[in-house]
Length: 214
Image (tube, rainbow, N blue to C red):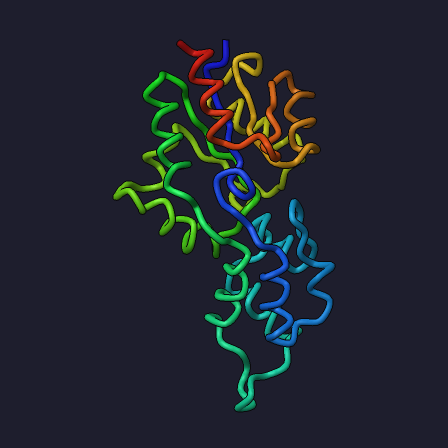
């Protein structure tokens, strides 16, 4: 029986628009950003901020070094980079928040696992989770993020952290993720995995898990 549901954020909870983000950074004059930003994994300098190897301030300084100054000749402000980076994130529909609450009410324990960074997590993501008047922590029994742990999925260390830190039995745990590589990583540790990929959705997967838990 599945008792623990480990849930990805981007592509599962949150709708993404990578191309919009690329265009936003290109508008700031950042060259080569198309190869730096991936849907499932980033390259430098984005990878360093996503694994917490550099601070937000150092990340912004690196982008300023790579980008030309603004129209007035002054270096671009932090806010310009924050806005461009967060354009990757489109929406967190409230029916997905409701699905989280319903799964917990059915007795399932929920855990977040996400490749993300402090800029998005402490800004756009926290605001999106407040739509029902709750906080991010109110929806999950535990949270593991790449920028806090120093590694990104599909690195097994991130999945092992979830299992070890919260005392989860792999055979009683399922990953919901939109990346097949991440699903395979979870399966290699004995977990089950459901790829959230059309026509599968978080809502339909939640319905199946709730039905099985009853």
